[in-house]
Image 1 (tube, rainbow, N blue to C red):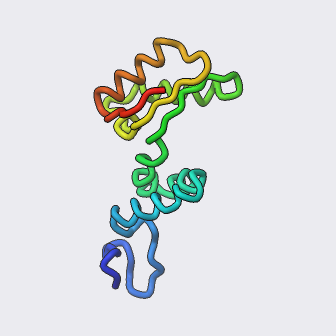
Image 2: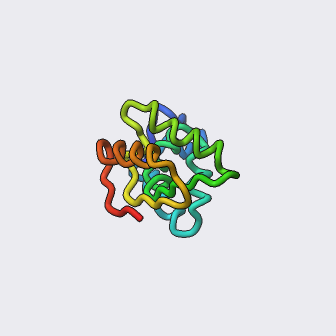
Length: 125
């Protein structure tokens, strides 16, 4: 059995499942995918709960706030996650925040407060 596998999740003769390998391997896979296709990282994150956790730092590293009419529902749901979450798992991964269009000041301050409290913002555009 490989050093990367977790014996409790894979039985002998059973195919190795991606979500059963160690977190460092998840990070390496996601970082390589990011180089070629950010969409592939998002798809990988949707494959399981384990992979979602592994890809969050890559998906939310560069956050773009944009309130356009065709993104209205998505935007509101996203802001609601910042309002409702106690630890706001997204905010701790944000390193760069870009604000586009007319984002309400209240929403921007909410996101900035959460990132300041839980994250490590390096750049604001």
